[in-house]
Length: 638
Image: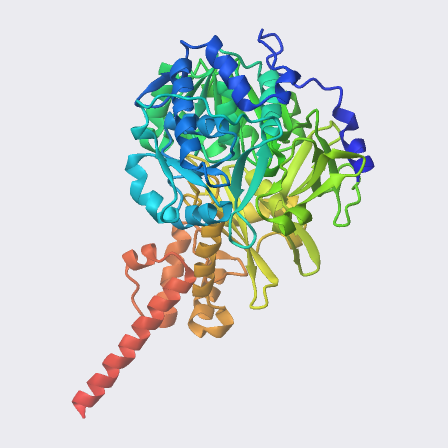
């Protein structure tokens, strides 16, 4: 394996980490020597140097580096005392405010690792994490007391940040080293239970070093934190900021709304924004057509699939000199395995942007199911080898053994099977296709769901797309259903046209059996598509769909639609628009239905009836009512 991995990264070793980025911006490089110390060692040195600068700010308050260092010491002192007789990590359950990074640093200063929980997540998920982690104590605040009692076992020590403000600060006896565990970050597990990847101080510092030296990050920068601080990306963002003397600005997108976000970004002079594409689009809703966020010098977009249209949004609404950096990694990889500053000259090479070039200190194999490297351009799984990937899954030895192995040529290097599928382009850029668990076999063909979604995303007028796999009772893939969200302002996007475009881009067996245009795809709090909810919605819709051959009324209504609209293959889920019809043809369909079923269809009923199936059910109900009326009349005459 190690030989394969070395080959995969050889083509990118000579590319500087800031290639295509802010190479002319002076800054103080992050030294390799810092990786031999702890996060706390670096923070304390930075706090002394920049004591009067703002370290962290939210919508209500700000802390200077001196303030943050003092609060960190007090939290460390209280946490060390609370968990003195208990082994294990310390959980953090706090709102998204200035206290969160203080709690993170305070726990690390005790020599323990932290488990960050998102207070907005369902209580049951947080309870599972608390149980699996074996937390020795929890750092929280008074307002969350009821949630703490719900999530954590009774009697677990609680450090309430609001009650330790005036306590005397004493340095904890224990001091961490670079090899000590720093954090456990939980992701969704295939069994339905969260799994926690754990990292040491060295792993997190290596990411800070790479990003500092790529972005030329320094104390003059002001970075945004717009998502839950419990995720690995947000933990990295906090450390990148606070270990360089910059300032971190915690802003709540849902509460501020687009106009509020624009106002805060401008007022605070944010220079580096980390965003998902959906949040990028929400922010620019608060801008006029010719308005820009001039202070932002780097936009970091984090998503598995990003369009050139997102690049165009940045060009229109940010400084003309702003850089767009894309990166790709996982909770288990610690830092990113690749990144690149987007070069518009490559626009013609792909409708979706590549995810980046392999970074130093990382080696990547693109392998088939048997672990053998695939040819350049072929799809395979990303397998990452580095000294900085996660140490494993917390208290999950069997799961760790399946996902992680040690490089026999270097015992300090771990190899991780990411489950992410992609290909290597001729220019050395990696392209992400989809998750391995989204790879299916349908009617003998192996299909990458991500490739279908990428093709749909490249169609004009499409903002985002997601594909759901419909399975039979035995769990085998039966068909594909696609859901498409139109771009803002786009109307009249027809499923028939999109399917026609897919037929020109993909093999027939990869074209979804059904496609539905929806106003908005369901999304998670971080604005990524909620695939679990989408699957639930699709399952509910699928159960309502009746095979036309099983229902003569549906079959007849579908036949009339096909005759009038000059098409075939109409399903109970279709309507006039989805079959490519216009308002005049809709009138013709209504007339034909009235003639065939000898029933008057009010205009408001036909307009509100979305599908063939719903219309057929309405007609069937009226026929039953009519027959019942005739029976009553006959009895009354008799």
